Image (cartoon, rainbow, N blue to C red; front, side, top):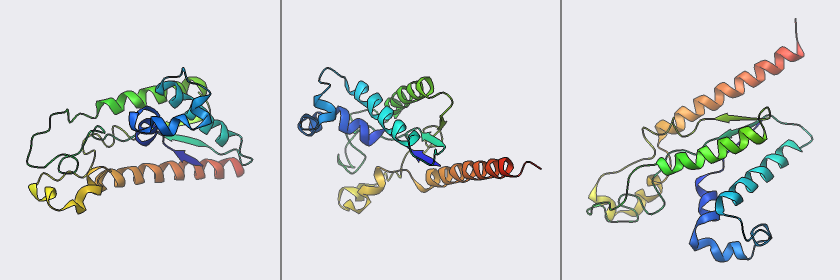
Length: 179
């Protein structure tokens, strides 16, 4: 079984102007200069899935959509001061669009091969550990917790993954012992 995700960090690498210089030195990108970052994202997804499907063990492949998160421009008390207003949206809806690109591409290209698992809607209600406290402006030790899913999301995903794993093992046992 292979569980994989390609989302926030990959889009940052593929689309960010801060990473343009790194992309310019990578053959994967320089050979396709006319590609948009979405085209690169699809090509990267295809390369990843093809690699998994060509493994000798012929694994079941699961793609988990990216969790809801704040936009790259900053998190409360981390990138911008906790005692100032956020000038940007708090909506993680742009991630939903990234997920839609991945889901449409994977379901069209690999309809019977890659199983899609939700990571977005299970995390939408609490996308990360949010601290609404001016102490963060002083104590940066909370910074890491601001950009990753909170424990509620991690527990929900663990339960989901465990259920999928149990179902796959059960199916394999049924296939091996049809009686």
